[in-house]
Image (cartoon, rainbow, N blue to C red; front, side, top):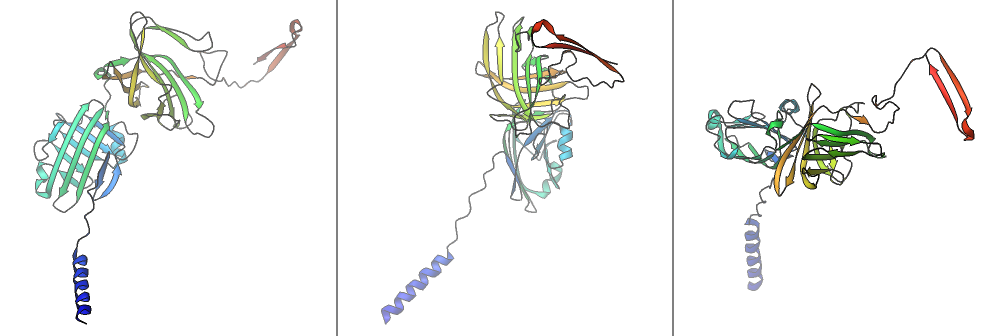
Length: 351
């Protein structure tokens, strides 16, 4: 009987010990190109920055909305972390100078330090198009804001003079219609350069020769159309892809080349997304990055794109589109079976 009581006594103690043990704490949430607000995680889809909004500062708009390429649209999307720093090259003291972070009703700055429990910020603008950022804020109220990002960013306004290679000539600029059956995207194909050139399509396919040393950029791009017009390439960020998705360019049919003065060609490695923006004057800027001799270099094409409809083969190629005429009278002349060839010629005049 004593052994029976002893067994239950030991079992009860063991049960109490087990029930008092705490469950392992969950691992800290790891963010990658995302931010969390009070624990709710959102992806970072767009980062736009400007050096003109506040004198002596870089202002970054970090947004969960994809395709944003200017500060105005970032503000219209109305869901962004705004980061203002005087020096985007490392650790930032949010309690000094003009440095500031705002999101919704949260503000972290020298003026609001009494409302902040802890704050750390690191901002590294590693190139004009790439950003590395880490943010961890806890307010006195307990509200938290965290962000981690390492990727592409867009400078606004675009400054072609700040790029390594600036192109201003479109050898060919084609619109080829719907990408394929069952898709909603449309295909644009560009051959761009910074050099003087000659072009020829008499062989049935586009051909060109550079007259001097220069760069050539070939882009095979896909996008949904804005409205019914194909004549303007839609703005936004175009990602590398092997498919025909909206706002993408194919890695298989896009390329960058350098031609030396003797015409020798070296292929360069395109890297990362492309940014497209057309201003109110109709000037289009396409910017991106390629690697040359192992060194990352930035490029921008900036000019007016005169798009040709590649689906249409008019007898007047300078028009490049159908001509609609409302006629009041027409007459036709059939010239018969010419030379016994089994075909005839008909001439129609519309008045």
